[in-house]
Image (cartoon, rainbow, N blue to C red; front, side, top):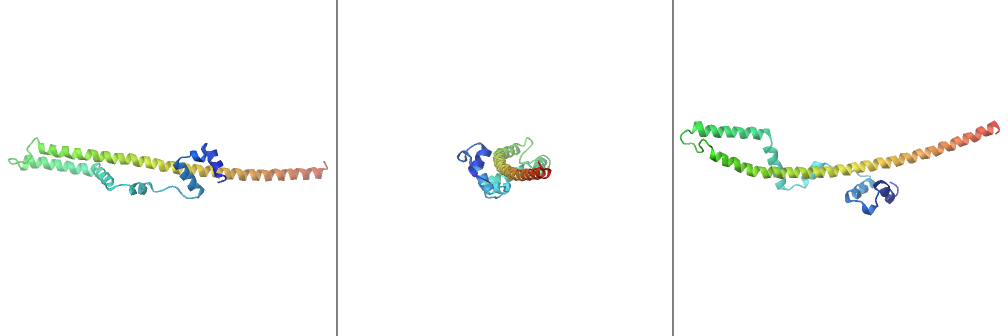
Length: 178
């Protein structure tokens, strides 16, 4: 890259002092010819606390078909035990009040955990969008830099070709005696 302040002004329409933190980081990496892309999953997981990882795990399990089928099996077993097997001494007879209490407590605990996981997913999406912006910005800068180099090369070659044509015209003029 040629003159950095000129490059910044030309491509960002602002001075180097007006650039944001992301733009400065991308410019620095582009100037150093270093890659900027990273493994987003690894970078985001490295910042996660134990509680956040636990919330993600619970949400992953609670939102799976295996959990739904296992819980359905648990409900069927509960109902069968309390209506058929323990006909006379059921610990939770037909309206299944205790089962309703257990289900309510499970829902009361599981809902905020799933919301935590969804908030974390939204945060991950924002993190991924920021990383995508950095990579796209660097790619754009690299393309612009290549354009400048190619344009400069083409202009140099055009100048050389014009010089050759001028030289040939002079030789032709000399040969024809003009």
